[in-house]
Image (tube, rainbow, N blue to C red; front, side, top):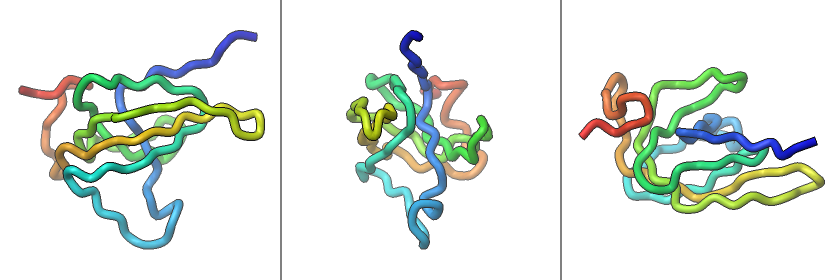
Amino acid sequence: MGINVEFNPDLALRDFSEYKKGNRKLEEGRVYNFLKKDQRNYWLHGEQPLLETKGNGILSEPLASIIILEATHFLENEEVYTRGKYKVIKVLKEGEIYFNGINKIK
């Protein structure tokens, strides 16, 4: 069998409107919760991109620079999930280059 683990160099979330109708603003300095299906490992020592996913590997350009504060794996109905908290460091303007790959540009 084995253990399925995914290593993610970024946090890719669905648009919040899919969860709750209405608009959501990304605010610098705010802390948000996230929930991802499956067991995921995230880098905790620095900034990384926040992306929007449409599913099936369809990802946006970076929307913000974030720091993941915590990530926890748990079981619910025999399915593995990862939940955690992230802090928005900087909201990026459309087309703004802030990362080179997953590395923050100094």
